[in-house]
Length: 196
Length: 118
Image 1 (cartoon, each protein chain N blue to C red):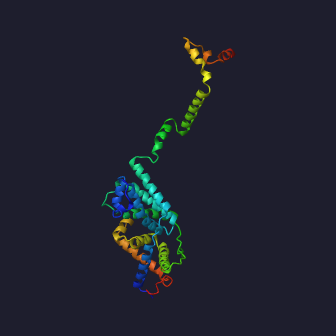
Image 2: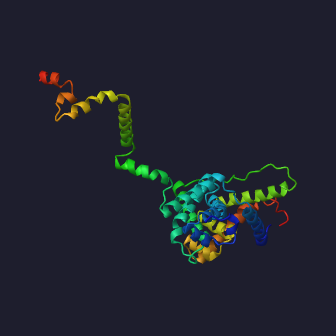
Image 3: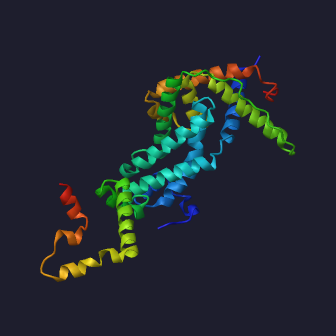
């Protein structure tokens, strides 16, 4: 039976996945709209801003989710944690195979005439500057920092995704944050931090 | 000289800006993901995506694939054409078969000449 998308708003990801496995195709549509932006964002940051490759990884991760739906047991894992782990592995494989150089100059300056454009531009510049600094981090530090501070996962969840101890997660995020601060310190005034 | 607290505040502001800067997936990507989900759902339900073709595909496979089926179709079309265009050519058959027996020359008029040539 097909149901309007908003009927699913309060349904957890895990229940939607089981519903999809039981034949509710609309559940997959809701999951796609709910999860694809987060997965794409994480993949893009893992891959140093390569949007096309991040889209490929997003599609592949979601395909694996559809395939595993039939064996999914509610309560055993969170869909987002499982997906982040898949994306992490896919991105790590691609980075390892490509051995790519990181482009540090990714901060753009969009033009806009709206009244709040200045504030939005400053926010966009801060996000872009952070992305550039993240791209320069070692892969594991970048992954830990993104999962902790951008995706809001707990350290135990990150430990599960990265297959390391909680202490190792804490170490990676601490070192990552120190490196980010060092990279961004020189741009404080440019990015509107003169007051802090 | 910025302190560690200054760095923390600066990073917190950067993280907040980046969290608000979630990329919008393209319509094409969303369509591909949904198409994948439909294909997986079809496979799970045991219903091929082009079910209406499955019987024809199985028939074609049974006779050796689509090229063979094309040959059969051409032969059938020729049969229909021959039947419609040249009914007089086989008019001798009723006459020939009305008796108790018929010679090979009733069916193959050129046989005596062929026989003479050896």
